[in-house]
Image (cartoon, rainbow, N blue to C red; front, top):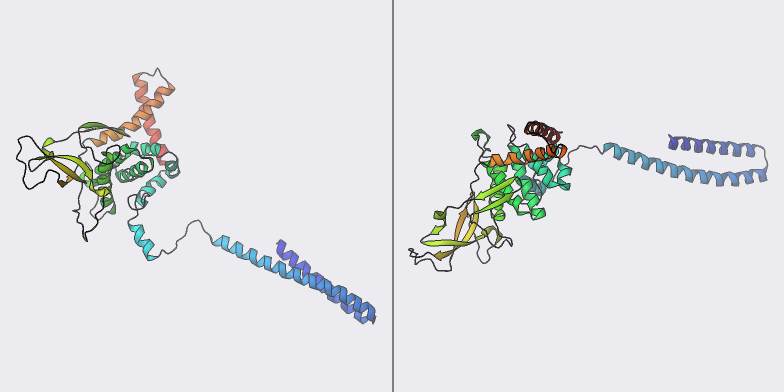
Length: 344
């Protein structure tokens, strides 16, 4: 409106200038006419320049308003072929960022921004809610997000947690919840399990994989790692010094072969056992390929722990002298509040 009124005013002034010049000419005063013409000509040139400037500004303003009006919050744009292809297999293992399947869970639970600030708290929230019927898809998100946090923080326990979640996603107690053969998350979950086992059981310097009996701490509980000694014999030799083969590349050969499947691919050294029938075909310093498969039993009981621990802490913080009945009541209320918060 302001731009239009200015243009209108300039047009009126130009019209008035033309009328005044015409009137001076009719009076027959030559000097008067020339003086009036010179003054009016200067005024007319200034007004014309101003008019052009205003018209230019008006056009730019119209373009800006038009562009702003077209920039809707939601839209669709076409990807080039390579970008579309990369999008199909984008996940934390290939790009370093969680896949769309996991970010969807964060968006639906309003936790995406919180995950950037406090990933461990968000993982605990998602973990406390996993056991609801039909919520097994959260297991995949927990596996991938745990792996992403392990990569960012170098917290080894989250590598192992990623493997546990991937195992639970691949082998649910309810067979009807097993991922379909064509579900792309299935292969990603296998890879997360394999890498999670290798990195979660690695030594402090990550030079080897420790497969000894021991107690391991997880973000949501603990894991008692048991080993079957019979599985560590190879042609009369004892297997030792396990190294993850995924952390190496081979040079000098045109083809390298890898059998797809579940389990961490490792290399092991051989050590002759006392009085054992060691094979003469295996040198003392040979390296043999093996697969390490860790079966996680009763993992679902561990998943429930964090939610109850958080709720119990809140009850005792509010009332250190709470009775067992008050604690139990607080646990139920805490469980409900966490579900509401997660889905809010």
